[in-house]
Image (cartoon, rainbow, N blue to C red):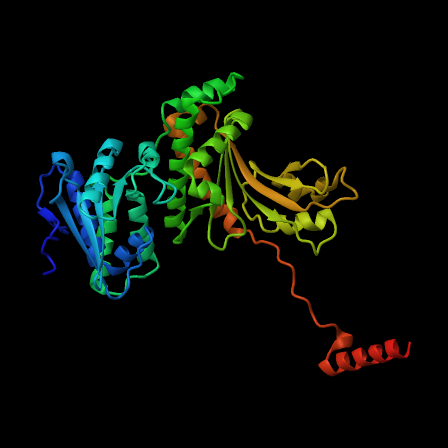
Length: 452
């Protein structure tokens, strides 16, 4: 039967949409409702599990359980994972233990390691964790001890905001085919969006953020093995992931972080490289890919200037010869009325240094861009908005508030209106209007070459 417990469990029950739990059991309630929707809303379950590399076909069936106790408990442990996901496809079965935290509760590395051992003892494929902590991808875990572990049992992670975003995108794209399932998913979105569910975005930098800013603003050098800087970089990764989810919900499409293959596969290498950049430049940087946008959104948090720059780099149109024509091509795309903090940085060929102007100044006088560059034309533009935050930059909460306001606002007002230049397709010349003309001319040339 569908609601029978798997034979490797001694206790548990099917995940319920309406769990009968204590009012203080916010964690159990939220987990049960989400797992139940995974099993009952086909597209929702399929989308979430596809992020873990599991393909859910028409013959697949998802079953979910809560408060499970496994038959084989290693070393007499009495751990009780929050849930279990079982995917049956024909005779094949894929299993995952689930551990969830809500609100400000964070995942415990030692507990996850025990669940890994429990999964190994009971022939369970992996562990899934869910919390308000963020990870760049489901396979890069927010708890460092988990990433350093030598266990062969994979641990995947979803933030609650990732779960909410999946539900939101399915509904906004009208991608749920069954009407009743659509109602369920809409209720899940409503539930997860309410503060009582314990779901929240990344809302503050760590205490070390203020200390690091004091060091940089006073002219100090960040140590090569600074623990404070590593904590800040880890928090920055969580915030940039939250930013991509915020933009995903706003644009109703999947916005992702742009990372090199090396950084995507190895979080430790990424952190090491970003620490070097933070030490050298005093900057935290990120790139966000919006599907079909002219370019990635580049975000730079500059500690020395206490500013946030948000912009996009576009290739200059090669079919326009003069600097003025190329600049006007870009200016026509910037339709924002208020331009007091919007700039254009021009990149020139060879060893020429970039030059920069306020967009408003260039709109008033495009010739400004050509001053001192008579024989050159820019090969690319960086159009960006720069916001000086002052004391707010070093504050744990206000920095996040301002960042999450600036990035979507730049894309809404400027980025979404930009178009990348594309070389035009070649045209057939008037004197080669037909295939017969071309063939005759080619034969004539061949004959002349032969006679010669």
